[in-house]
Length: 245
Image 1 (cartoon, rainbow, N blue to C red):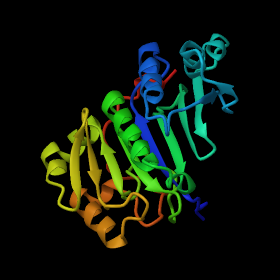
Image 2 (cartoon, one colour):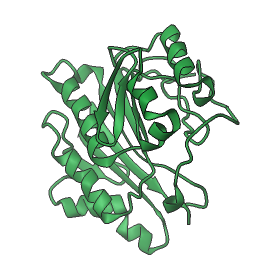
Image 3 (cartoon, rainbow, N blue to C red):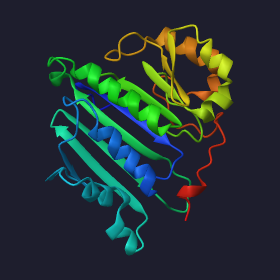
Image 4 (cartoon, helix red, strand yellow):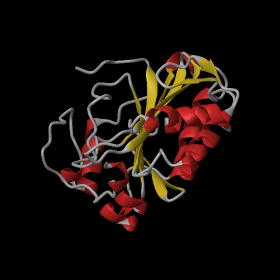
């Protein structure tokens, strides 16, 4: 059963090492140069309890210098603009391949203030341009199955209003196939493509449209209609060697 929430969420999955100092620096630079209406003000490893003053302190939390000295190979950073708008950055290194990820949410109650929604989407787009995720999406948390588990090693999630396809999916689908997407708009963002399957990010993509998109790219490449316990499918060959220790 989905936990419905009155807000918008985004998720970005990366085949990139967030423990790397240069990559971590880029992440912070994008967030701290975001429009003031969505720019983080507080941070913490698990609770955003400190005001952002020195970026070096935030960087140390993200790369987990203290923990990694003790043999813990993981990092977590919570960034908060307000109770209505916050972000999470996380990476793990284990004996299994794992994506690094960035996620965030914006509550509907905050969207009445000026250009907040546009600024939030612009931030997601800038993260995609600068950081080159393997996959990303924007979807409403107020629709059923928004929080279904994601396993890109097997299949993509069911079709959201906005999908971001990185170089791995460009190779998997074929670049011309993505550029010729007939059900919405396609925009190049950095090394990837921003593909819109529904004009409103605040609504669910109609089931008929989701079916059309799945058929266009290949049914075996997507989860569908709330199902997520797939054991097989078709996915890119991701290079996640950086995440294995």
